Image (cartoon, rainbow, N blue to C red):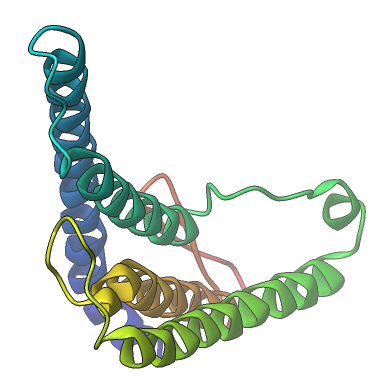
Length: 173
């Protein structure tokens, strides 16, 4: 399992990096769209109607992609004070429970978002003309990636691989 994880890590790292770049491009695009909306409203006195729904859609993407990368890099919010005072065996158990719950959360988010997308597909987003189900694509992809990255960290804990600052450090058994 350790060799498999070491082989898969570059692929997941590339996916994480790609997600971060897409999220960054989304933030830039949203900033430009909102800037255009403000310019249109106050200078041209003709605000584009598509700018707000499109910027919200882009925001959904970069939030979900950023959250997935945060799970992989372990920079999400956590209260570790209780964990640090526990013996190592309890710490490992707490990590496994936490990561297992994150995996289940991501799976649930992807599954139920898929159901919502299917259920709202026949509706149309008025200004954009897209099917209503497209609103849930960021949650589907984000949930799947959150699960994938949390599962990666779960297996790392199980096999005793610690990832710190993008350098693999194998724990002494």
